[in-house]
Image (cartoon, rainbow, N blue to C red):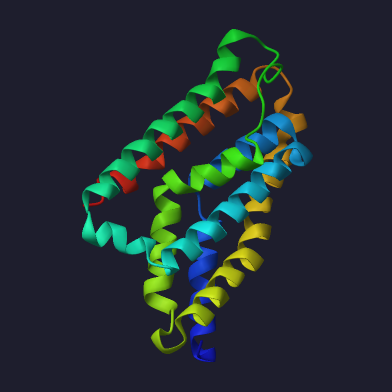
Length: 200
């Protein structure tokens, strides 16, 4: 990969990974409800899942949407359904009792990994990064550099979202703050679907 492409690629990754989206909102909610340590498998699952997805796109899976545009519709429906389910899980304990999270569990490593395959934002990031920043003459090398940069820059950025939720954890334990927080995060999670679903 030409050195002059590294800075634009770095800025692209930071902009894509650091901004609110399904992964970051779920991590913040998990940090607030379960603490940072219990959210680590979720963080690792996102990192691993995005790497596998990115390399799969580089190996040709991204062409699926060019050949079969209907596949993107299926992906959006599956992703939206899962996000609605996660939003419901966030508010369900708040409705049932004051003791939020007693029977709830954070996403596991494999749940977070598999979610990337129905996460339209993850697909968009991967397809855009490979199409824009890969070098056709050294395709696999440049794809590996892109994947490595996503991992190096992405892991701390998404961890910051989880830690931000954890930093609020003790403040949220007072009164019904956690319940209101979970409702707010559920609404934001559903709102994160709007730009994805509105794309042509």
